[in-house]
Length: 270
Image (cartoon, rainbow, N blue to C red):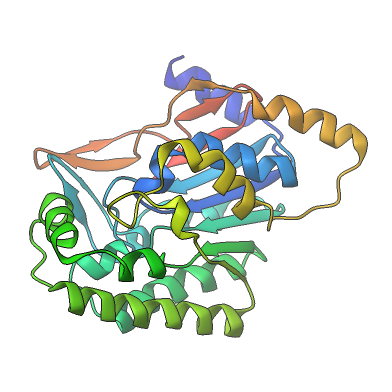
């Protein structure tokens, strides 16, 4: 499907709600699944605004191999959110721990997340956030920490103890932020996590997202539930592409929305 056809569909679409998704690797690997799980509770089709991507930082540009993305707070998702029509909004924030291993201090990370929450609350968003998987992080042995740090975060110079201590501060800060801003903060079970302590075990993703997304609640009648059953089996008609990225240092742009699901849910990826 070309962009002109996708734009025409967007103009004709009538989404019943808006879903905002912020995260990094875990969200990227399960983007369609997360959308479907939220729609299971909140209905669809939806307008989806997502800021994701492997290694994504909440506050600064981040590079993985040949691709660079802007920080989540600096991407165009927020201007699109401001320009969108008023409709029920559901937001899911995850993968916050990346910035610890990028060397940012806990207070800076918490400021970035707080800013995102405040922008979403201006639109009366129902917010669900995952906390850092602190039990898995604390139980990571030294050799495994060194292995995965060097593999995923080669510029990181933090020792295991320094990283764990900063993660604890962010973990506690998110608990306090959730209490202050009154949104749902979900703990993460150790059995969900892979050997690196931060990524989900692939075959457990459906169960864990069912658990997390159950915190999105909406009163649905029987007809609505009949409609959401179709959402569970829908596939990509067109996968989304980043609105802006740098590849080998060269800027690439793509009009949004760029993704389409079978129920005409339109996905913009920033």
